[in-house]
Image (cartoon, rainbow, N blue to C red):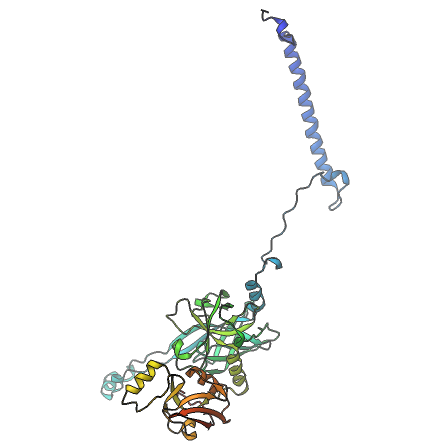
Length: 418
């Protein structure tokens, strides 16, 4: 066995004095190099600072550059926009906020009108101050000259309203007309080159299509909600507003107070209806006035400031087997119904166009204007589409015999139901 001596190591140990001397020399070299490097850095920075701005010699450009982060924009790239965002981009600038106010006068309570009290109070009689009601709704611009459409209940009782555009401008709007029967109203603001909407066709809709609502629900401006067309042709009575004459679009897009008057869009960004928050207890359901109805009413309002709705003067119900049985058992009704389908006339208003033409209670309407009728809503739609004073053929079944009666609809009277 070999002993562990110097033969075991490739290097020989150096004396301590030589080792220390070598270390000092190395340290001196390191410090010198460090000083030269620092000096070169300082001189280089002074040289670069002395160069004119925008002129960089090739040797001053670093070999490797850090990539600059791209500037972020608030607008998404066009390729990232879905059809909803594209529709809102197109229509959003034409949607407005409408603030309306009206004064409600409060009458003096009846006891205080008694002369006995006036003897004691004299000029100090309590006089209630008028109360101001304020409401907020939506609307959209039809024409670039400032013609706007909204719901009649949004501007009810107001002649002047405040219209706020999406670009932040607030303008005074004049109410040119309102039609409470269809809940459509028009406003005019003094402006030019305004953004406008594109109108679609509600009569071509299919349940299940996309529906996009834009408006100011609960005072939250420029709110967008989305859903589908849930159903079509909802009658006023089904919706819970029998005083209206509208065949509503039903949607599950959220529509709340403040949305009223705003547009309902299809997937292409075309307006197919006017949103109306008419059911305070509706949850997950919204309703809209078809754009064809709204446009027809708006044109009449712009032209003459009022709308003449065709009127027959009948009260009617849609027959079912159960309803037929119930009517035949009601001795007070005085009617004998012989079929389970059709629209039964239960009452004819005295001195109405229907009475003058010869329609009678018990008549079952089968056709209006040559179109087959199944429900009372169908009759209402066909009458609404007719003209005041024009001839309208109505085919009825009277005690088993078919008769065609010529009726000339009159103008819809105030506070009267068809």
